[in-house]
Structure formats: structure tokens, C-alpha cells
Length: 393
Image (cartoon, rainbow, N blue to C red; front, side, top):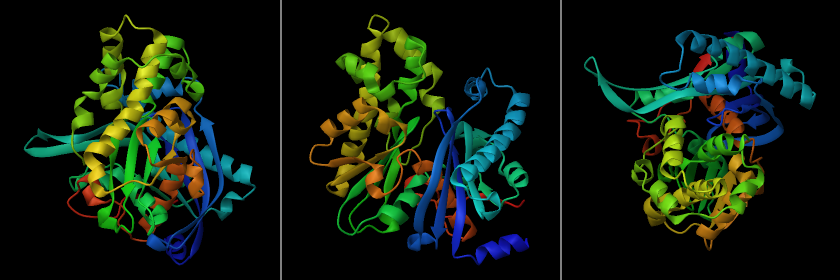
């Protein structure tokens, strides 16, 4: 406990942020220096790396994220295994940056989502929503010997929120502007957008998941081409966007639903992919990839047009996540957002790939500082609250 109390007194901290997302391809680990907290936060990225999962682990996680194939014993073991892999990732980023792990003050870990059920159902007289992120932060704290904050989504959902997205608070405290209206778009497995109107206060931030990011493209690439993803969007660029397929996809219920909203593999996983393949079996592989790739960008623009355009014009759109490397997605975004500067997150001084991992380092710092980090108008929670579980080594 003394270590925790001493940590509270430190103005500047070395913090590691960990993220393994819906793409289920590995661990993003960022090492940052954080000074202060809240809107006074100053951030410096020291190092970042992505560590691929051991061979077969992605498939094992996906198996245990799907109803009908999940095994409770395997989930229990995965909960410990992932924490141990996260601990190894912390050691790796320290080694790469040549910083002794003893100097690390704090770890923030998102964990691996295996099921996210934001829509409540009636159970035994109670309305129950749920989310489950594994890679237990208590195990991570014990193995590394570092104070660890994890399980960020649960607190928001306990208060009626969707538990997502959580990045908007991070976007607000670091990237708001008095001069321009900007949006930040992260394209991971799922895509989410944050709108920061010019001169906005915390209550003015609007954010939500727009639909699939790389998820559908990756799943179809695996099935149709036996590749994990469409590198640089090359396959998409070789195909033709089919209007009838795109119209079918854009008619999806989630795309049309109003915020607050969040989604995940439960909606855009194997079953959704199977329906696409069955319904459009006569189309070429390249055309399917081209159209599903366009769906990601078109859903973002449709979401902005329907739910955000009333907030005023948009001068800057900053893109991060794996989707930033798909040139077909980036080209499509620029075609849709005419008159808006579409840039990579590096223009803001932060790595496109590292952004989400850095976010959870910052959220961990906010947790120990006692700051509420959910935005009720974004998640739908009944009130703002401090998020995360603080686990002592």
C-alpha cells in the first residue's frame, strides 16, 4: 500500500499501456512518460512494439469467444495465460527501450475481449448487460511486481453504459482544439470515431462505434485468400465495388441505430461473414474484398453524416489503428470527406499503431488520480465514474 501512496505523489510517471483488440493478432505495448493528469496531462511516447501471439493462439481465443465452441476451462486458463504474455510484453518493451523494469511506475491493460454484450436482457428479475475481458490484471500485477489497472469497461456498464468506446476521454484531454473542429477515427477490428467540436468542453464530445473496421476484411481474406489481412489494400484495389453488396451491408441494423452504441465480434464475426459468402457466392473474391473494404469507410461517413454533421463542419480527421495502413480505406475516406483534411495520427505527434495502447496507459493514470474517464453522453451511463480495478503487486 505504501508503494501506491508513494505513486500518488509522483508528478511524472513511466507507464506501460497494453492492448490486444478485436483483431486478435497480438499485443500492442507502449511505454510513455506521463506528467500530470486530466486536461493538464502531458504525454511523451518513449517506445512501442507489437508482439504477435504464439502460433495458434489467435484461433484458440476466437474459438473461446464464440457461443457453441467456447470451453469454460479453456477460458479460465486463457485468463492467466494472457496475463503472463502481457507481463512478457512489458519486459520486452523495457528491454527494447533500455529502461530497467524497476523504473516502471504503473501498467494499464485493456485485456482481451472475448464477449461484449451491451444490450441488457432480463434475468431472474434483473436487467443484465455484460462484458468480459480476460488477461487478469491481478495476475499481471503479481508477475511484473507493478501496480496495474485493468477491467476498464465494467464500471461504466454497471451504471447502464455500453462500456465503450473509452478512447474519447483520452482524445478529449489530449487533442481538443480551440481553433478547429476535428475528429479522431480508430480503425482496429471495429472502427470508432470521436468528434471534438472547436472549443468543446467534456460534455460536447460525441463518439461511438461506426461498425466494422478491419474485421470483415480480415475474415474474408483468411477464407478466400488464406492470408491474415489485405496488405496495403492491394486486393481491394484490384476488385470492383459492387453496389448491390454495399447496399446490403449499409442496410445493417447497427449502422442505422442511434448512439450511444458499441459493437464487436458478436455482431461482425463468423456468422455475419458466412451470410455475405452465402448471399453473394457468385461474385469474385476481389470484388468481395473491395466492397467490404469500402463498407468500412462508407459506414464511417454515413455515421458522420447522420449523427455528427449537425454538430458543425469538420476540418480535420485523424486516423489511427491498423486500417491506416490499408490504402484503399484511406483513399475512400478522402473521397467521402471532401473538404476535410484526412491525416494519419502521426500529425498529432502520436503513433497510429500505438494510440490505443497509449490510451490505456493514460486511463490507468487517470484511475489512480481519481478522475472519471467515461463520458456518459458517449457510453449512455447514468453518470461519470472512475473506471478500472487497481491491482497491487
